[in-house]
Image (cartoon, rainbow, N blue to C red; front, side, top):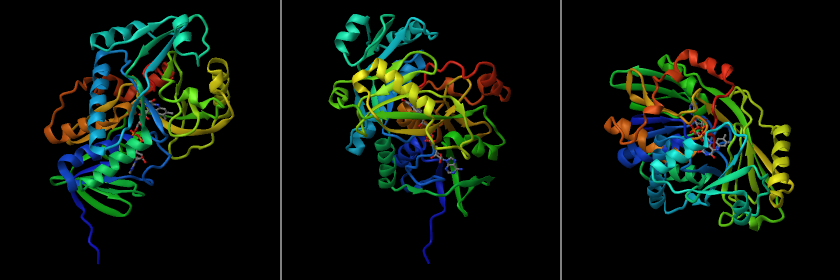
Length: 399
Ligand SMILES: Cc1cc2nc3c(=O)[nH]c(=O)nc-3n(C[C@H](O)[C@H](O)[C@H](O)COP(=O)(O)OP(=O)(O)OC[C@H]3O[C@@H](n4cnc5c(N)ncnc54)[C@H](O)[C@@H]3O)c2cc1C
């Protein structure tokens, strides 16, 4: 009879973008003492981390995020060297600032300057000369940051999991975790009818975070929404390759943002929807209204990128009331860490995985993660009201 190992130093619950990164960084130190458990098939399309690309950028509105993003680039580079594979593609990043925006451009520019991040302001004439793919109204200027680009999301997730296994970790899929109990010296985890024990836990469950936290008596004020991205089959795809076309963001709330051709033969553009949904009872059908808004935007502002819709892909997004991550120990459980991506974490996946490892292995991290504390006021139980009062808050960080 085959006997399975059922006792580990650390169990990672959830193997999306953040959990896969955590499993990898933990496996560098704990090897076969790491178990990762995923409720669906590895690489499934029901969560937040699927699709070919996510924007990576240094253009953030305060110094802690800019510095954390700088650390993310370094961590991705270390991971790429280990994987022998490129997952970060620097295309340059263009942020479009319409006069009518309610976001504070000066905060972004000040934070980047304070962190030594170079950027250029492009007036409409210079924008048109450098990036002729865009047709923009005169009231829009651009901020160009050359380090911006994309992370190959599918590639990165697969690489993290492949290397975790290479380092000896066990990764199990189609095994929903249904129970967590504190036992002497650790935790007993029930998943897919089996029981496992571990001294330490990582909770990286994205839209399902509160189902897992319920085992510890906690509930965070999170909201899950149904989002989508659309690929256009432009007849001029060569003008939209990563060496000619940057990632870009229209800097308003519920923004449009887009990518060069990468992973699929199409120009990828999206607009936030913020449509609340139950992650276990949702449609995978694209929203036709959002698809049309995106198509109209591309036809008007990126005309040679427009073409028939190749496909529209839906996914989930988990929001905190203040749009800041959760990256901390669960109160009262120093050996249990939890992370929530708060709509914009893929670019940080590698450094988040490494920081979770630091917290569990060494009890500290060199990074300033004070904004991401579990006990901050924005995560107190009554903060859930913020979603109703303020709509979806300031989503300037999205993408
Ligand atoms: C359309 C869209 C565009 C985005 N654009 C960007 C961008 O440009 N740049 C950027 O940085 N970020 C972006 N983001 C955000 C980013 O993708 C997410 O913050 C990130 O992927 C979150 O990863 P995660 O691992 O927390 O969640 P997920 O990928 O959802 O992973 C959580 C995993 O936990 C598993 N799980 C849950 N419960 C259990 C259980 N009980 N047992 C076992 N497994 C369980 C789930 O099945 C899932 O696989 C975007 C997101 C969306 C949806």
